[in-house]
Image (cartoon, rainbow, N blue to C red):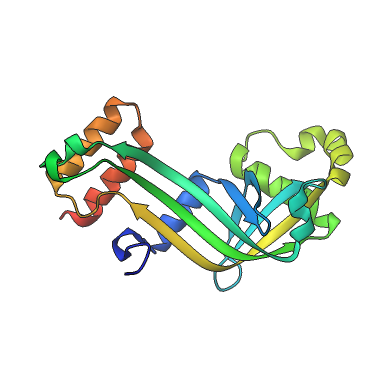
Length: 201
């Protein structure tokens, strides 16, 4: 039996890119179980894409930036599903629905002159064209640059997961969505709604 189950894998490129864009604050893990949480930007470079990020120079992960293996995890919407929402709760147990993208590859350090352009790209991704820009604090950012290392993760494999009760009937899916909205979990409810629209004519 393979894991994860095939029905929980969604390799639609649009899904993968949406999760990475909307939930860009990822978990980066390297050998030795060193981990850090940080924003990562995906670029359509190379066969499987490339992620760009930056770290404080004293972060232990910097010791792995010269070809070290790494895993980046983007966690999307998720939510609890009570067994009471099934058609027959006596033959089911609660579960947890979720969407995530896991990418594995090799880390590469970028030259120091790439730090500022990377910070500009990262800022524009979240501020937009009319928001705060690195140029608004040019001197302050320049003073910080020596303490920052920019890097890229050259992606080798991508595992996109969307466990969202895809096999449940429309009535049960609606119950899950309604329960999520009552709890204020609208992102999770919206993801479930996408499943319904994708699989229901």
